[in-house]
Image (tube, rainbow, N blue to C red; front, side, top):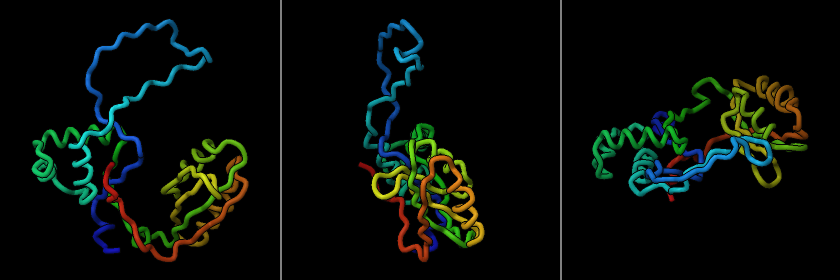
Length: 196
């Protein structure tokens, strides 16, 4: 991997479901209770509209170079600089994308990177939330397969990684077992998979 991938601001997309700002429409709502029949407050409805082609093009432009100016993106997609800025703000506010600097952990003093597979007894979501709260976790995902959760972690060295896995991850209520996969070399890392 070239060094430029670690220095440029890169767009990270965190969700497969994407939403554009909904178009205004008239709705008639009759509220009889502020609670659903099960006694819990109802969840707010999420808009069901998809991402339009212009927003997809903006995302693709930022995936290529997260530092690209709004003016150059505007030229590529046929919008003004201000319109691009507003769309990018709406996309980030909605959680569709995040613009971040992707770094090389080894060059920042983190001597170890690893993937930790976690098997859980009982509910998986509370365990994933507890793991996500740990600073060393840079990626936590609930999975189907051999592990219930996969966690990508960084540490300053073997001692910190050992403490993290044996002392903290395994002490989370619900964690049955873990398996740690040490990273030896990063062969590929990309965030430019486009949009559908």
